[in-house]
Amino acid sequence: MKKRGIALLLSLVMTASVVAGCGSSSKDAAKASGSDTVASEVDANAELTLPLCDEKTDISVWMLNDSTAMAKNGGDYNNNPYYKELEERTNVHINWQVPAAQTESEQFNLLFTSGELPDVMFYSASQGITYKDGLDAAVDDGYFLDLTDLLPKYAPHYLEALKKSSENVQKAAVTDEGRYVQIYSILQTSQPSFYGYVVRQDWLDDLGLSTPETYEDWENMLKAFKDEKGASAALSAYPVWLWNLGAGMGVYNLTDFYQENGEVKQALFNEPEKVREFLTLLNKWYNEGLIDPDFASETNPWGNSVLISNDSTGVTCTMYTIPSALFLPSMTDEDASFSALKVPVANAGDTVKSGYVVPDTNASWVISADCKNPELVLKWIDYMYTDEGALFGNYGKEGETFTMGDDGKPVFTDVIANNADGLSYDEAMRIYTYEPSWPGIYYDWERELQFVSQDDFKMCDTWNDFDHEATYYPSYATMNLDETAEYSDIFSDLSTYIQENLLSFVTGSKSLDEYDEFIDTVKSMNIERVIELKQAAYDRFNK
Image (cartoon, rainbow, N blue to C red):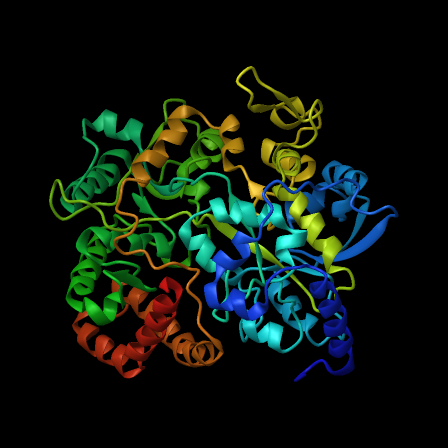
């Protein structure tokens, strides 16, 4: 009872009474065997009866601010037709707690000093919305519920979806202490890599150039774009995407970590000479005017549409839905076209060992220890993993937002595809279906293919053509409390130092003659210890 006192005691007593009626195995047994214990108890044929409760019942939900949806619904998710229908079906009314946009991480941390937590909270390590000491600590400190014994009875459909998911997701669903605390969104099918580099294909055709393969090919292409097409930023990329170009030289995750054959590595520590070679090339390209002179201040990870629209850029990094939806409509050249590029390699025929691996899950829900009715909350979430709930969540209301095609697959109506109020399909889906990328749904990502041409989707085939296991370090591999504290203490300053110097070496504001000194400093800032911490988390994840 470190932090919650009497309130926690009451919460634990309530939870214990719920667990006692579940008929599930002990928490210790779940810890001993991980997901197998829980999965073995799941009734895959369990039915969830609607409405979930006889009388209208409120639950409180803390959620991110989707500025697009909020602008269209008057600032209240309950105004969305989707949530009105969800309430009608379940008899559960949601009291949304939505912080101002861009303040979510800060406001999430303040929840723990507020005295009472909402029933359900959005949780995402990738977005910095986490309990500072980790999930197990959040349970031990009395903030989050351990759901291990509750899920088999009250969320069996979620567990069934989890059982069908990838091994990585199944591992991620269990904490280091063997608990189920988060409830993830889960992809119904694996999604190929959906972003990477694109090139002005019409420029390649006009100049008689083949699709570039090697670094030399890329350099010749960029020079031609600059000299023959007048491109002032022949290559334009968000800094993180620019670093990805090093994969063909064996420079993986330049500002992060990777693994090879189970050994966790960091390029600056393990492959400093390869990094030197890569930075030397980028500096050369920058000095020759082939890279956007303002790339270091670029904030848009999906491509600078201004540079695209005024024909200043011939190569950029983006998502497969963007060229047709955003780039081409803004361009005056009616013959403009884009195609996908693989990252360059040193020698023709070399294979790429790194790329974007789409995780089979994203954000998650956590349930607070203050929640007075966790059984109802879990049923409400579990509905989104039933056949009916997943169909409703992904496509909305049959006959209104979708109909069933002759092939038995749902097809969006004009409410989504050609909205009379002028909503784009993305805006319409945020209003009439469950929000994309939100937690707690059996997500059918293929629904978006109804709005993407086959040519655009084929770009994913190009970007997805790499060895997905060779260097991938799973984001699900998390550290324990002590490791997290030590990691943050070391890497916060180290990461800043690394990124600032990498930019300086490319732009030339720092001479590459100082590279050896830079590497020595990186080592002196204890990067080897950070690698050890990441290795420990990775080893634990694999076990």
